[in-house]
Amino acid sequence: MAAASSPITVRRATTKDAAAWARILGDPAVYPGTLQLPHPSEERWATQLADIQQPGKADLLLVAECGGEVVGSAGLHPVGPSLRRRHAMMLGINVLSTAQAQGVGTALMQALCDYADRWAQVLRLELTVFADNARAIALYRRFGFEVEGTHRAFALRDGVYVDALAMARLHPSPPRLPGA
Ligand SMILES: CC(C)(COP(=O)(O)OP(=O)(O)OC[C@H]1O[C@@H](n2cnc3c(N)ncnc32)[C@H](O)[C@@H]1OP(=O)(O)O)[C@@H](O)C(=O)NCCC(=O)NCCS
View: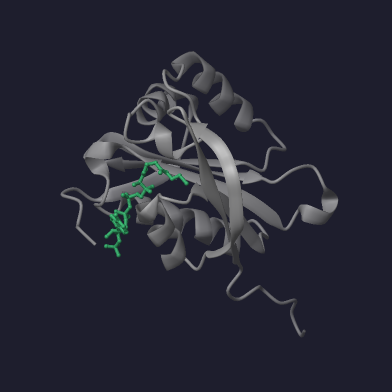
């Protein structure tokens, strides 16, 4: 893996990161790989970042900084309200095109997996990724994600319906109760 020229730090996102968040998602090398739309709104992200910090929300939003600039964003989210699926969360991750292939995605994935495995009682992490997104798939595989299936014509991307892979990772070593 290429080393970033400055150290990469990961921290929780705040509403002050709305502009950087919108900038990453507005990058033409980023949003086609996501379910976001072109021309993201900074105001909308400010609202969403504020909403997600409300007490009781299980979501975790992180940013990665390199050389004083926010270059990556990542999120861990409940899969839904079902009590029986509380052990599962889904994740998403994005890195500014100028900072890709320098370890930023790896740093964000490590932080999300550590949080899920060691603090948040998550046993199953899941995600969808476009089937031709080789870099993202390689990154997810390195963290233990496996392909569970293919969603055909999952989403419209630049005028074309594209397939997505369902990937998931089960906790590699679930914590046990004392004495169990
Ligand atoms: C996918 C993404 C998050 C990865 O972040 P990143 O900072 O570039 O990732 P890293 O630099 O930490 O690692 C990328 C790995 O993929 C490898 N890689 C790079 N290009 C690749 C390719 N075309 N095919 C396979 N692997 C590739 C790198 O060598 C590196 O592996 P290594 O650490 O073993 O060397 C980032 O590229 C991105 O934001 N893409 C656009 C948005 C997106 O697709 N998000 C994911 C939505 S599911």
